[in-house]
Image 1 (tube, one colour):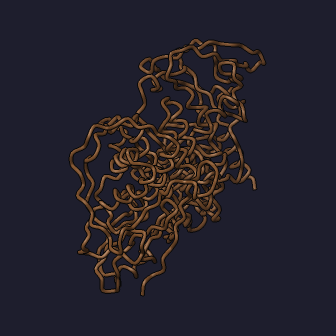
Image 2: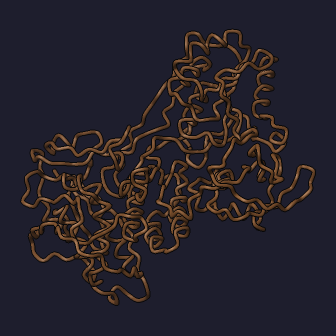
Image 3: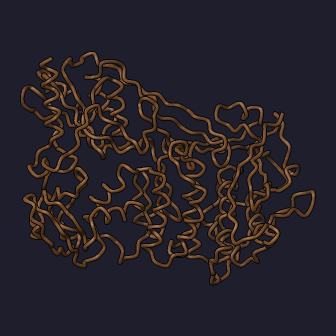
Length: 614
């Protein structure tokens, strides 16, 4: 029995006024009751023509790339698996630009059928499948087969594959292409008459694979958009119209100014509020941030406070000063201008632009209006310095970080800097704690050793700590229309040599990912948390390299990182854009920076004292 067909709706934008009858007939057509044979991929690329990316061409490219990426991820063939899809899309964009508008739908379908021949407007032309048919299908919870993630093309009988836990429930995908229904198989029989071809090199147009070229930019941003569209697991928790982001991303690629182009691209991905997102673009030399300001400021109690400075700096700006304006712009307006393209969630959209403002691309003087702790206001000109001149900064960080693993405090209390403790250290740490009357678990920084922090937590938890907050999302069909969740559960058992002393864990607003994962274990095990709400993102990342990626060997490619695993709070609520909330809220304070005291540590010590007195 055939499985049900699902429907995937892809938005198509109309321009101008009037009805569809006013538009050129740009819909895919079938010429017979049999799928046409596919022609060989060309192998003699011609000189790339000049292209004018008018509004209609951008709309047609949008339609094409949506279909292309659906085929890339869900058409189950070796040819699709092994094709260089970003390069294919880039070349196809040029080909579409040289095609009359009314013929672009057919041209796009023709190009895709060279890789995926069973792509048709007539469902009855697709090959039939029964339980004994040898077929291929995708089993995938990510766009790449990477680290903990799976993307594999399986070949077995349909009867065997359809009963696998995370295989598709559908035989056929139905997608919308230029307002016409289009079909392709999700289970593709072997040894068919029509065989797709693997696209690995340019055959139509000579292209330079550099991001500065519009077609390369469009292929890159559409690839990033598609990975999110088909695999990102947070659309039920983050309100965003991701379909509307694709035309904005494509339009960004037509910008001549790099800063504008980057800002428009970053703005669309900032809407996801995924603090793991990194987009590394090849940056023109004049825009590389290889200069620095000799002091660093953070938002503390809602105000921009200098928290660290270069020892040798003589600007007149000091730790504890408040920044009121930069180049005559109010500091909050200044940071708000950066926030929309910060790639950060609501929790960090201004805090991260603040502390990263220490770097700049220009040597031009910057004007700061500052207020001293005594209320005096000064205007100071600061000239950035080349990064080669950088010397050590001093001052207590917003999130204090220590080199020690164990620190002896007063009253028989100990501080364990869990982020520094490895599994090899635990026996020695355990010995040092034998006389402890209370313990502070500093979990404000990212842990370096998974087994190290788990072992330490086992000494202090009151019960079995269960973390069942993460899950894989297996995708059986385009546009996340068929998702099967695979929950993951992890536990930490209380150690036999458990400490029966008061304990408290510290959190920070920059505690993120594995850092938050460990705090969820602490909470499940009954350990109270003191500090601030955390960053609000957990789960393993995916790293995609497009056109070679952005690295030392390929400075012209793009690297894209995002969160591909669902992660929630311990109670099942959304963690993304919310974080782990502490039991005892203690933010860093302006006064604590001015007197260089870790007020969260002080509050933790007071908490332990209260517990001992009870």
